[in-house]
Amino acid sequence: MTDTTRNVFYFGCIAALLIGTGIMTSWNLAITILNFGLISAIMALGVNLQWGFAGLFNVGIMGFVALGGLATVLVAMPPVGEAWAAGGLRVITALVLGAATIVGAILAYNALPKGRMRTLGLLAILIVGFFIYRAVFDSGVQAVEAINPATAGYLGGLGLPVLLAWPVGGLLAAGAAWIIGKTALGLRSDYLAIATLGIAEIIIAILKNEDWLARGVKNVVGLPRPAPYEIDLQNSDTFVERATSLGIDPVTASTLWVKAIYAGLFTVVLLILFMLAQRALHSPWGRMMRAIRDNEVAAEAMGKDVTARHLQIFVLGSAICGIAGAMMTTLDGQLTPGTYQPLRFTFLVWVMVIVGGSGNNLGAVLGGFLIWWLWVMVEPIGLWLMQVVTSGMADGFWLREHLLDSAAHMRLLTMGVVLLLVLRFSPRGLIPEK
Image 1: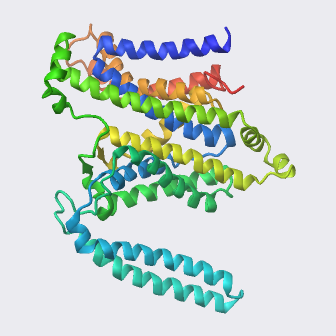
Image 2: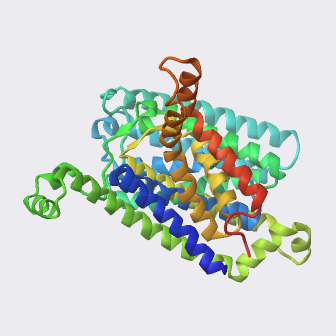
Image 3: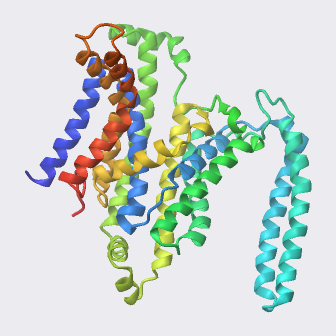
């Protein structure tokens, strides 16, 4: 079997799984899995850039995904005028003062001679700047969060089209990755993993606790959409006539049409990012990155700036994860910081890359679709399987109850089994790197 035939077979199996889901359950569920599969494939592409191209072990994926979700709120939600009038200017002023304090400390460190004077100067700048920052910031935050806390209590966004939030989410994640990379990329791979995981938790903690930014755990709901609302379609005579002529209930048709629009948008983004990643992989830059991955010492001896290249690809991969995070928040229609769990946004994405094929962009896309389908469908399939197995047992029998209750844990069991099987029989993934 040639590589092309094998790849067509794999993606044909994914299409068959989605079609089978639509036939056996509902097309609504099938398109939902498709949409999240497209987003998962984009996340897997970002991680594959970092790990497959450069060997960077980043387990802070959920932090960059969360920043993409935050960008959706900051860009698309309308500004809360009362909150801005009450304390918005003070909050912005405080943030500028905080940044000025850091810049002033850096300038003082570079300007003053090494010794006691430099230490005292840095301490003076940082301590005085901190207290001024807190004095201005705290009063502004209290005023903002006191404005309609049940429905608002935050500054809002810019009120721009939500599609603009997707590249902005990438830029926001890239900026955070640059700051993280400047401090953490000099660490060994295991320490880098610990550092990125800790920083991701810090980002999530900020989103959960800073209500003035995005309402914290109270969530931001009602995000603008790039697709029409279902109720508007149901009130459209033209749409209702077309759905009726096709023999589809207008309510069901409106839901399917909206999700199909999302699928089209996500597919365009995935194709663009995939083509760019492929061009990067086969360019001199891509060959250099793989040379650095395989032997940093030899690459550095050839004059390559390893640290700078690691920072470069760390930023690029994180930006792709930020774009995926903005897309997912747009699809959900709400920002819920409590849902950014490492299991979903770190473990699953890494399984997608490993199963699909580390270092192969097509393999990362395949892994994104396959693992997400399994993640969604394994639990209902497992429940059905347990019902079949226990069909001959009496109701209330302890073994029957135990097996039926265990169906809820089929997800984690299946992920582990799939990962072990792939590592045993195809350790380089289903579509390995050439």
